Length: 226
Image (cartoon, rainbow, N blue to C red; front, side):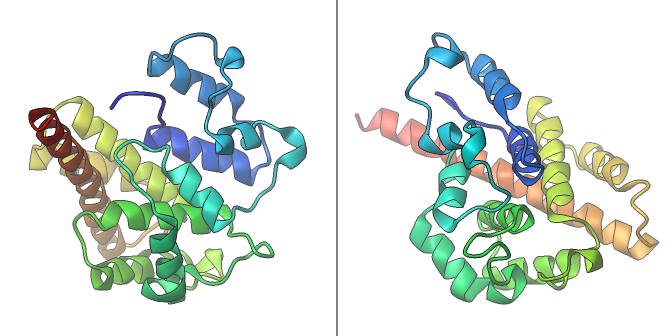
């Protein structure tokens, strides 16, 4: 992927910063260096507006609007958010599992993470399957205490699994299963819940891998048709 973008692991850290009302400067700078962007980070005036806003302490907040979630989501590699689609998700497709905005008209960081998860899952799953995953993992959207796993932790876990598999260029079932099991160790889940969570992490990470292949396929087609 070309240009300045965030990996899902970096985005997970950004979400943590927003929730803690911390400045994500260091994360954004590291992403700048990783992508080989030209010039100094501080001298660049073409950063996406959402990043410029996050860097302004006086505007820092713990909630995000739909437009902010979409803007932030579109900085993630192999992701493509549309505001109208996300509006449909929260009003219809996953209404019961995202809930109402929890900070006035803005959504909590956990709710934003769920929307990022949905974006990844829709590469390979229909919304009925996605709703079943959300119900199993997160339960009541108004009560984070009944989650089997916090949405931010789940997002970070399958992002980590994707990075492991993708960077090693291997889709070995044994490797993926072993890594997923490591991520679920010491989770406090029952044996049944842990095994199910491992499968959900694997499925989610492979959905991201599917998005990668879709992106590459489109890129080669565009190259051929220039």
